[in-house]
Image (cartoon, rainbow, N blue to C red; front, side):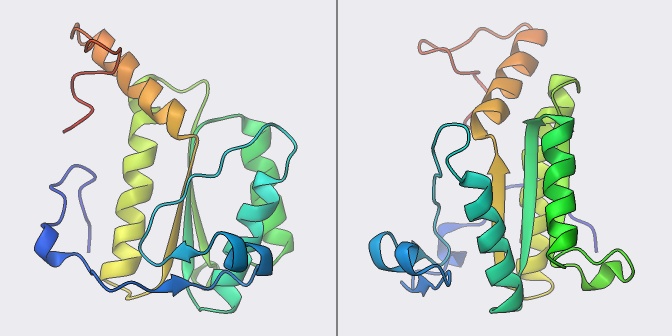
Length: 177
């Protein structure tokens, strides 16, 4: 089964409205800032404060405790960062190189040196992969997009290359579509 990366969003009537908490297995997160199943979370912080450590822990926990899968979309990542994340996941056995079908994470990268169109499609590709695991495989899925600002920035660059005027606040005119 293949899904296109450009397709309409599901209707509101198809969305699950039940409120339930996603247990991350990280006590401080579950107590102070619990994650809603099906919700969206922004993880903000400066360099070296532990964002990647938290992401790795979440990926490990959904794989081992929930039998789920994670999708990581690296938009405008540095090659070194992507390689480091891959090696960490391999060491923690979330990625199984011997039997790739047993891996519990999918990585998609559009690196800094890629054209803006390629970087913009990384976020959409990661989203499509997460929808596939959710809808077809019926798995719990965590979707990570790092960095959402670079995703929007790539969209602005594509829009400028197409000669479209930015909106009053600087966003590309196609952001809502």
